[in-house]
Image 1 (cartoon, one colour):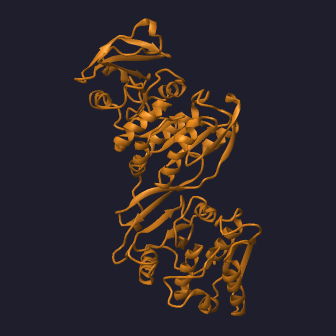
Image 2 (cartoon, rainbow, N blue to C red):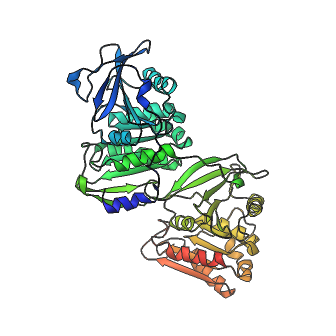
Image 3 (cartoon, rainbow, N blue to C red):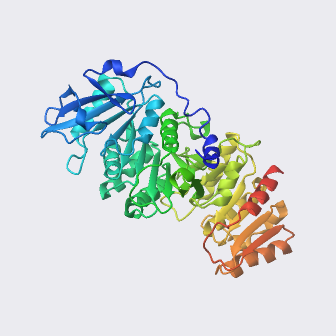
Length: 504
């Protein structure tokens, strides 16, 4: 593995691939074994009607491959490691046995079993797959959560079985995967069970735009963890990478992952998802003779997001939790969905801030003062700082301004992106009620596009009035930009402004 890529993986995988080895796994399998890339292979036949599984000796002419099964039968294969890792982890491939097997060989070296059952254009996942899973887990003690490896149609088949059994999957590594509409509609179940996904695709493969990218986009919006590696100039073939370490590391990390208890502030009853950015990393892979675009939580920081309710408040509270909380437990109190390009929020998470999205009821036109007051009081009782950062983009900025104006002594600063100073929460609209903030000495920062149609009537009016009131305000104008993108290309000034004022 090249040094750049090794450095990329070092932080998330310290101790990851060093699995603990347990008993010899082959002792429970009956039948004559044959060699497969230096490991013991056991073959079986499954009756498609009765699902009976019996030992079968692979013909010598098959070598390390496998031929089509006899009518009414399915071929099944297990290859066992020299010593099994703790928990008896295993990977499951559907379609194309022995094609680009380097990841599976690497997994065998790390103590995984690997398994296969016949699959092709006509032999799709069905009750035969369920019988094979039951055979391996109940009769032979393999983990109840296999890792899936699927190439092309095999990727589609992995998703077919996994979306129907989301609680029985450790992860999916899909290589130039196929797909179908039904899979796209069921991805939410995989995200709800926090199943991590990894796609490796060629940039010229038609399936990249047809299935891989739609799966990526949908899964991200559901809060699921999906990472992608896009091979520059690659088509549908060759599959995989010459160095299997990235895929094997991903699988080992996913299998070994634990699910920590939710933070105390959630009350224990919550929905968990993941939040991460859209940053692309362009990395050289000299063994494959090209660069790969890498993105997603396997390559960048990913944060836990919790959605919960508190008594007496209409609407959910959403909190994104940093890896390490900064002293004083600083937090951002904001309105509106935190999108993947919220660069300032990503920067603040890295510095130990919690990001809190205030509740909005489904039966109201916007935030309600009483709900936001209750949310604030609940969180400071849980140890959150008494002076949060108020943040919003567009008219969401108007809503946080309104709450801050009603509570000027409870705010450390306000950061707004292309703000629209209108509010459903406020009795007096924010443009006409800046005095309480100026009197309390609350510093303001606006970042706006020079072509934003709201710039003149909103930010420039706020700037003039706030300075006349003796308040401190800074305005950053991005030349040539309109209302979008809301997040500035350079978020560092906003991060510096917020961290400075939060520390005071």
